[in-house]
Figure 1 (cartoon, rainbow over the protein chains, first blue to last red):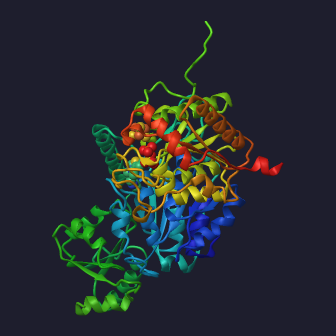
Figure 2: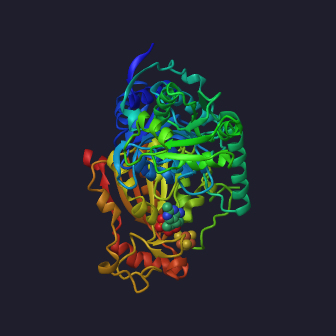
Figure 3: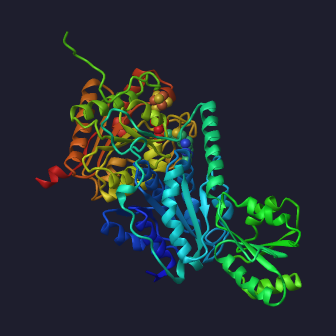
Length: 351
Length: 250
Ligand SMILES: Cc1ncc(C[n+]2csc(CCOP(=O)(O)OP(=O)(O)O)c2C)c(N)n1
Ligand code: SF4
């Protein structure tokens, strides 16, 4: 049954439904409803919540709980996600499954608490040190947030990798009707007994570790990690095409900005301009092929990447388009949000 | 034939990489012996630090997580929520790890009174990275980042962890011990045993600080370094029980 859910609370309940029983976090706007909700909800279902002393500590708690085999998550907003990067790198290096939510605000520095998308590079290109990528999802509605959160834990377990879900203050704070999937039967969750360090008594130590001091050993690990990423790219890359078939002007946007672009597409088409939208749902792996296919089409005149940043995803769009068509950028930042009318004007007047 | 000495069941056969005479090896053995004797090797989970004991996972024959620098208490706190309450959980950390970069994680795990045991090796120096000043380097003591000796006016003051943590409500047991001679090694073993027993009885956090040596970075022989620990280390860091809630209960 659909109910009216606030974005952050819907994410929290979807995590519980997915079988997540442990949450570690530190307060920061605009994601506070996630820890607040889980602080009372998790004990109800036999789980636990810790308000950590910092985001550094919170992500390392995730390392501990995930290393002991539990479904667990943390959430934060931009400055807090910066602090978590150390832990995320270790989690990637120890191949631990977990879910991290970033309800982005504007930066750099303390920035502001209004919606922004300035953490694209940080999320998709690794963020922390070393050669790694989390899988990154960018839902655009509360229902999609719910569905992605619900499946993210399975994806994390399947590939033993951190999964990051990014939204912005708009998605986190607004309310929409959404349906939470049924509670997972915990007995159906994957068995991690062969690797999780949960205190075995069979005399075979389970080691959770990212130290590989021999160059060959570490190179081999990195190669294996990237083989895994190639499989992930094959299986998990997701995008949505909107009014693409005959589109001449193609927006590329993710998250809440994609919804603004959809409204602009409708308006432009009403004005006789054939616009369309590519909406990446996974930002890593990036739907490069989906963009490249469109770039090959004769009807397409140009791409306009729209972001609430100074232009970050636009680099991946340019790589995908590979010079076949012009790629322009339209952005607002600092917590400001573009209106559909702004995009219509930009297409019509070029500014 | 009667066996009079044996390797603890909880240690693997991997040769220790520690420098000759280093206290890390002694304390590893004591932790392993205690868990053996308490019948608590099964189910035990260790969290090892970044520092000379980073390879702890090669030596302790139990489940082990290698934590990021300073974060072991946070890692252990989360594990405590996940696993059976009867499983023994311990962290093993150096002074740079525990009292500098991980100070917040240490203090807050103590504030929460996590039912875990923290083994803290205070050798007053950053061993692994080559002898830099630690948060526990004593005034006048030389290090590669205070070559004329620590000057509190320039380098700040060292911290006495046991004294500081004893002001908190959370910890159940806090003791400072040393391993500079056999009687003290035995006392250290008794302290570690008491710490794990407190954990078994779900009394809360137990914290054992071992005033230890680092012959390599003190530029001393093993013997000289132990003499230094005895005369200087234990003078600045007095041995003793700093908190024991079982005494307070009585
Ligand atoms: C975030 C981070 N900073 C710095 C280091 C480098 N580092 C490795 S070991 C170490 C010091 C360890 O000293 P201590 O905790 O006193 O243990 P010891 O080696 O003396 O046993 C440092 C600073 C690191 N690995 N990670
Ligand atoms: S460097 Fe110091 S602390 Fe490290 S193993 Fe050698 S003697 Fe021990």
